[in-house]
Image 1 (cartoon, rainbow, N blue to C red):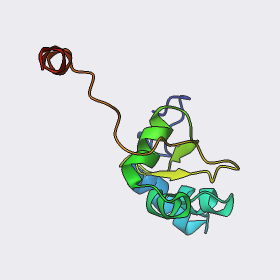
Image 2: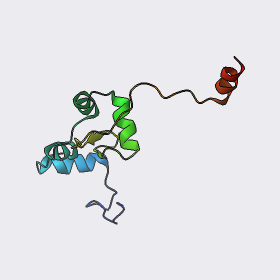
Image 3: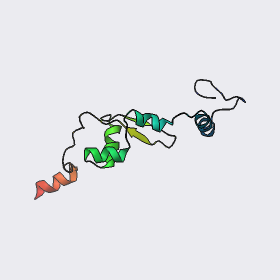
Image 4: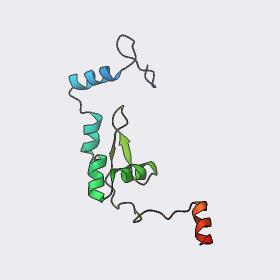
Length: 107
């Protein structure tokens, strides 16, 4: 049973295979194709457009700085192309480890 209480014809829960069969037999676009039609792109394409690495794109999406949507049961995502890219500070952040501060003050 789906979260909405809907079951298939023989009263079985919907599986990915059933949904795929229905989508193909009725010539419906996949979720990925529908999102791409709205202008959403993959992580690698967005990273190339913004000049950052793919891990930065994923981090920005996790922080809510980019909008993304899952398109399959593997958790793969497509991302909206932002009007203004999020700001990325250059380089690595400074080391704020307490031990490093103690050692620098002793020198």
